[in-house]
Length: 339
Image 1 (tube, rainbow, N blue to C red):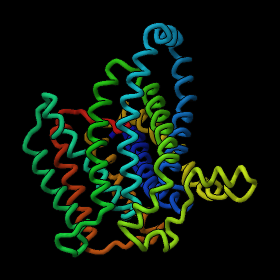
Image 2 (tube, one colour):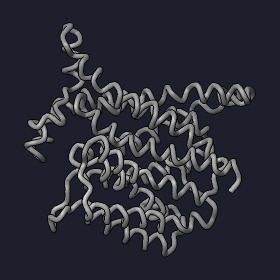
Image 3 (cartoon, rainbow, N blue to C red):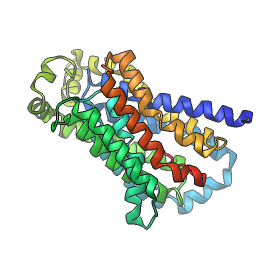
Image 4 (cartoon, one colour):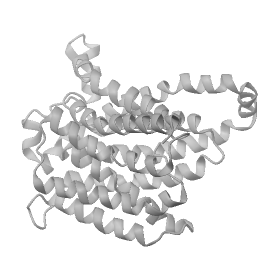
């Protein structure tokens, strides 16, 4: 392996690690602020974090900016709106699911999009082979072991919600695959993150005030345990305006929010773009599939989440299924980008 490929692999491993530990940040951040508030702030930060990279890229090709100013603004607006809308649904469901499951479970179950993307691609005229179906069987079997947790016939509601979010992650991958052919990837990413952040803040005002009742209906002990004793965004702003301790929730969640916005979005996306220029496609596919493993490690180390033999078996089955489903992609020398 040459030095450039080795450096690329290391950067991809760091990217996967950042994304995996991002699930820990998503879970711990909800100790203080609601799920939509958390997503709103972190995705707006993520959008802004890409601006320096966009400006640097434009500085290298100054003529390109003028052409985009003339012909690309409408296309960028429509593309960003479409991608941001799909992204909002995916991350909203994911964040709600994390309320009822572990960071490790959420990381691996979100990885279902790796298996689902080629299956949904069939309806767009794309071919998929036997490895995809074998990988699907492995992954779904692993998810059952992961979510049932010894309770036959009853699956964790958080795992199911996260699995639905994986469907929209798969839709998002297919949508991005179409949009990047005629839209600058960095501009599209920054735009979709901005839309997702705005949608999330709107949902924080409209949905979070009544979300506590929904949470109590699914798990009455959750809110009383203090694990998710967050205040809604309207309540925080009201207290802030009165000069009381309304800002304390946002202040306490600052580290998870900054990690979710700047590290998971800005830094990790930049590392992925740089690394995949030199990384062998097979390496990229395998390393990026490690995201769920890092989520599990982070959950155990930072959140003291349990990791028994049954859970480990489920993780192995799901990880194997993801790799098997991507076997044809590896052989063809191509790899899909998540962001």
